[in-house]
Length: 439
Image 1 (cartoon, rainbow, N blue to C red):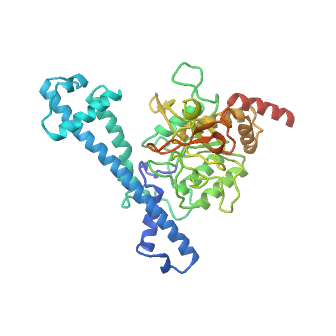
Image 2 (tube, one colour):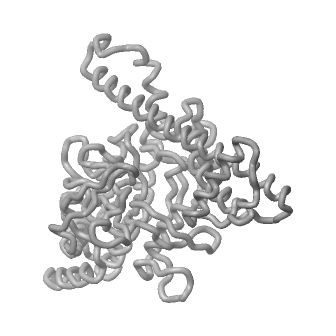
């Protein structure tokens, strides 16, 4: 494996900007304060439109993350003070609902925090103020890197750590061998879904048995950079990988061409790319989720699949509420809610996302490639799609949407190309039949 977001001295990028932040930093000096009437060429007008889109998304994202972080910090600070006061007043080590009930606050802030804590106790989310603080701390930790790095226009760790020629997309001689990096939770969880040892009574079973994992790090806490994605694809292909799990994505692309060329290179070498559809509950036929299978010339990569997420809930709740969708774009759906898998230091944890659905489908593809190595990416893709379960075809399900907005029912097959759910058993049967026909 290899790490494309580290330096030769062993330092690694942990947190980086969102792509909208990088693009805004690049375009703002050129277009800030201008209108379309000030521009002369078609290229400038196109770039100006991108600038306006980027600025709008950046502003909304910044408000969202800063607002979320500040709200969490307000609650954390308030509950922390309340916890200390109750412990001191009652002489207890832990403040549960019964202990809090005995405490009568006099200050307005404490009264407010007691109401918040009681609401959490009643909902069953927490058993003590300590538990509440742990949960709120998790929320703060979620928002913090986005505030400090993701939307921070003054933060750019690239040149000081990686030291590559960032303006040269063909410069691939950079990075270091530290595939663990500062935070390997996401990659370890995905790898376990694909390939954790089966039937050893430890933790969980991966989908595929006897496959090898090549760890290629190109995604920080923040948006991946197109140059690193392209370099990672080429590295994996050149070192023998046959199926790439790509559990990442973003709203904007800095250099789509360099990624497209890497995808075409993988296609020429017989490598299948499986990409997470994304977690923004949007139609990616309309709002592109990069990297994508469609090239700039309008043609599509034949070795590229986009995977949406299913929940474990039945009937009309089968689609994960966060999953992106797209009648023309999403090829398959796979389980992606509360998936139990491997985490660093021999631990296990549930996680949700199309990032979890993609390795589930990727594991099925890996089984096919293991037992039927002559299958091409196009053949595996065709088999996965044709063998997928059409259980929900014709049935209405709740369309993924933002929390707090009304439910909308839609036919399952309108959310993806094929209205199918990945199925290992049927895929193996079809692959066996296909290879016999070929011989």
